[in-house]
Image 1 (cartoon, one colour):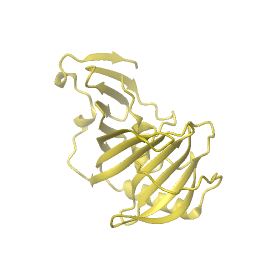
Image 2 (cartoon, rainbow, N blue to C red):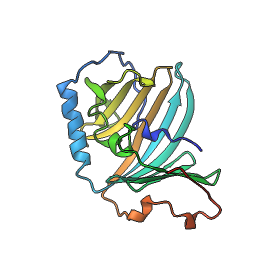
Image 3 (cartoon, rainbow, N blue to C red):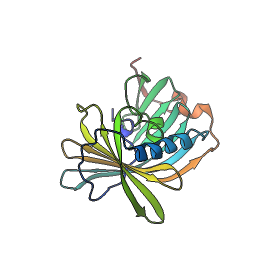
Image 4 (spheres, one colour):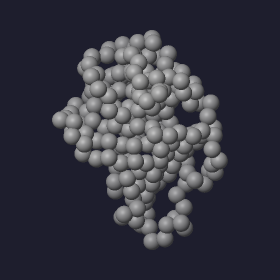
Length: 219
């Protein structure tokens, strides 16, 4: 079964000339920006986004370029990414591998510390990271606020996370995760819609719509 990396990382885009400061406390300016992002996100009934995903090695060579979509409503989400469909109704998670015609069912563990799609857009940084505002930059016509984040838990496989926040929209535009082995994982939000027409059934895997699928129930 393919493993979706969306639950480990946020949407990100390549950033240049970042210093590798060891952030050990929260910058009030960065905290204010991130709290604003979280507050704004929570006003939406739901969010639908298209994103791109890039993997680079330590030398900056691109190893993979992919794209996907995500639909979020409360604690529920539906993800389409790299041949994988992930359904979650807030309690159960279905990982459907299209190529293998196999679906794996697990319980959602809200206490595991995993970064869920909801946290990616709102408050995943709250207790797990120290943050520092590095300044502002421009991406096209967007004014971007650049924030460096360092995990409190130093045993994590990554040493830094870099966020780009769209200042006007108060939303996360991109994130870069820097692994200790040198690899970089980048997600970029290409477009986002809010308060779209959504039904609860969109977040539940319906085997009737996928004839011949093999079910592996790990609950």
